[in-house]
Amino acid sequence: MKKLSVDWNIKPNVGDVKPEIIKYRRYLQNIGLRSSTIDSHTYRVRKFLVWAEDPCPSIEKAAEYREMQIANGFARSSLNNLGFALKHFYRMNEINFSFPFMKPNDQIPYYFNETDILAIFEAASRHIKHLAMLQTLFYGCLRASELCDLDLNDLNMQDSKLRVRGGKGGKDGLIFIKNDVIQIVRKYLAARPSIESNALFITDYGRRWDRKDLWRMFSYYKFKSGVTKPGGLHVFSRHSPATLMIANGCDISIVQKILRHNDIKTTLRYTHVSDKTQREAYEKFLIL
Image (cartoon, rainbow, N blue to C red; front, top):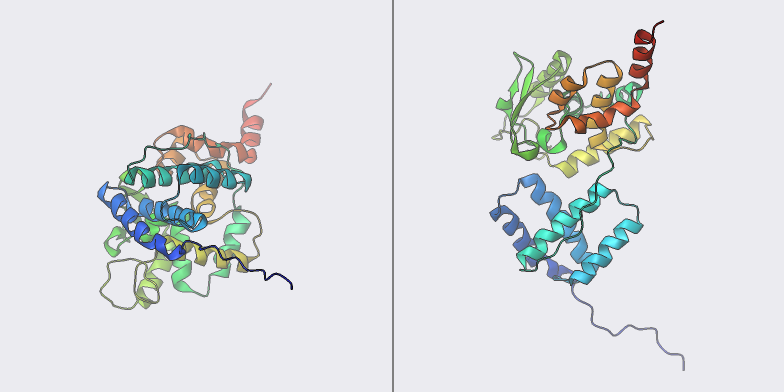
């Protein structure tokens, strides 16, 4: 008689990770991390626990998981973020454990050019809310979490400025916004339902947008626009405007202030793609 192909081993219930995730989120809140960091760490740890099929995997399992991510070609910054998330997870469980920090690659491998950006705007042109969000992101050089955290009173339409509260590193700041974008935002606000929410941009369910929803929305319009080059929301709203400003001759120190970088070395990453600026400087200054 042919043997039945049955695995009788009892497997851990993946749903058992939920209490551990709730505990982990509360731990991160208690040590004072920002909400966007808490969301990011929680997402990474949840994926790890589900993969491990164990609410409290061994540190050897964590090392195996990291090696798998390296083999899958994960960026160094992603690996570092995973390391930070797991470090907090094991510290919560009173285990002193961390991965070695990997020096990030300072090069910006790609960005969206003027044609790409305009194509994405055109794809969203029939949806006033999404167009207002995409243009505010791009022209404000905002991080995804910063757009989601904007309140109605953060918008100063008279001076064409936005107030960013609790940006990267917990810093506040005032940023410029184009008058054309202000007009798009005005149209959005005229159509915005009057509900009890301070959020500048609300979903169709009346709640504040989160980064995952924003990423999905951008991905939809990128696909619809026909832009096929690599790059997601951060490339669109940070790398691309910085690169384009430098390529068009903007002083690097001004770009640093607009992007709110602490160290100008961070801003200098964008200069390697600005062939146009280098050529113009070469022609202008190398004179015999």
